Length: 298
Image (cartoon, rainbow, N blue to C red; front, top):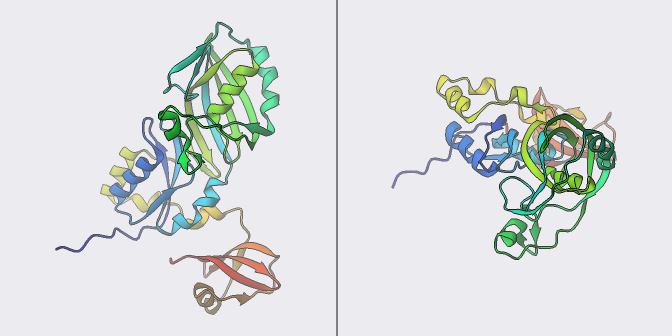
C-alpha cells in the first residue's frame, strides 16, 4: 500500500473572494485541494448565498483563526421589503408578505436604533448549537429552536441607495457574531413591514479587504504559475492588534518547549513573540515573565 500524502507545509493567510452558492467549509476544502496545503481553516463563516472576503488560514495560521474571527467585519447588502422568509434570506420560503414599502426618510431615521451595542435574536437557520444540535438542522426537521438573544456591536450602518420600491442597499461595519440576516429582518419590522436579506457581500475582515481577495479560478492560475506565495499573507498578520515582544534565540527555544522566560520591558498581557523577525509564540506576560500559550513551528 502506498504512503498517504500528507500535504504541503504551507503557512499563512490567503484572502479568498468566496463565490455565491458555496459554504465556507467547502471553500476551504477547495483551497486545500488547489494548493495542496496540509491544513486549513477560515477566519469567519460566510453564509452560502454571500460572496466576498473569506480569510483562509493555511498551516500554522490555523492557530490564529480566533483573532481573525474577532476582527471587525464590513458588509454591503441589499434588503428586499415586503417578504419575510423562514431563513431571513433569499434562499428560504416566503412565510409572510406586506404591502408596506418604507420611504427613504423613514429608513434613515430608523438606522440609529441599530448602531452601538444592540440585542439580536439569531435566525432560526443558523450554525449555533442548541442542545448539541445545529439550529439549522432543527429548523430543517420542522422543529425550530427558540434562539437565545445575544448582544452584538454595530459600529456603523448607512443606506447607500434606494434601488427600487422593493429594494434598498446598505453598508455596515460590525463586530463578531452579528447576523446581517437578523438585521434585515428587524429593520423591516421596525419600519412596519417585513423583509429579508436579498444579497450580501463581505468587503473586509480586519485588515483583509476585498480589493486584495482572489477568486478560486485565479487561485488555480496562481498555483500553476508558481505565484501563490506572492499572495500569501504572513501568519502574524492576524495578530496585528497584539503588542510585539522580541526575544533572543535562546529565549525562543525555551518558549517553544513550553517554558517561561524573563522579560524586562513588556507590559502585562498577551504578546506576540518573535525572534529575528520570525514568529515564535503567543505568550502571556505577568510578573516579569512571558509564558507561552500558543507556539508556532515556522
